[in-house]
Length: 398
Ligand SMILES: *Cc1c(COP(=O)(O)O)cnc(C)c1O
Image (tube, rainbow, N blue to C red; front, side, top):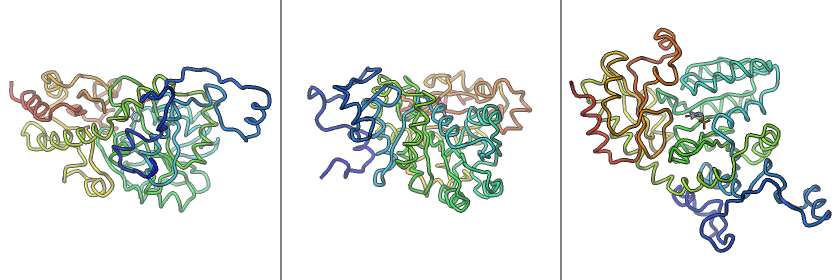
């Protein structure tokens, strides 16, 4: 049995993309710190330039350590159909690389709301300067996407699932079918889902982007991003990266590859902890609302169940009261650190009103759907009984 015939996510997370026999017979892959690559003679150079020889050339165009991790990420995202991956300097760099490559001046892009704020900012400010217009429509609403299409001008649909912070989950097959009908490309930022929980390419989505800084690396110790899709479109995007220069360096790629070894194990625990914490919070009298796709009362529960293996470690919830009440709960928590980000082994907690949306007034925040009493908890891989005990004491009356 060839190594690429094993398609389980745990097996892929450990083995995919790595040659069986490695440099010096070491079990760990080499970290190739090289800015450039040497040619034996002019004949070898000519063979390379004419396409007869595949090999490295210069650090901005590829690196063996980076390529191994790219192959592993592609195998995780697409265990059976051919796919390729392009590692980038960060999740944002992955998103901007795709949009700069696919959106010519005069074109139009559709975004969904409740999404990563910097993505919207990039489209609103930088792409607008390049003559690209956009529409923002409601998250998890394929009909709203269809209605926003400007025939002939719309080139790209950018969605996210689950969204941030309300964890909305869009029907992927519906989006893909609308896009195909109009010959529009689709991109999904699936950072909150990861390929362990959802595989959008199998529903006909063209490109998947992840911030590897979250679950994929999993240890809150690096920044990287990845774009995954069918090989021809990834080759084209690699050309764009060669121009823009937003590469992932070999040391970061090594750390990402190391983190990936335990990816499936960690996701199992994140899913388990997220579900149990969401169920606990949903029953708590001092919690007015819980947003988690694994709960039957979540508006996208049915779509999420059909499309996802599990629902991840991020749980958003609203405490009874106002900004101060939520601050008091956050400050009483002992296990989670107050920090942006999620998806690492350590639990993190934040109030969107004080973190990503701090510079907006309470009214402006409400207009974009961010309530002051909202808390976003990213469950790490700690024991769930400890996480729940901590929440229990933090939510108790003083
Ligand atoms: C973190 C994040 C990004 C940006 O990723 P970086 O690696 O921080 O640049 C984009 N989208 C989502 C959904 C994210 O959570």
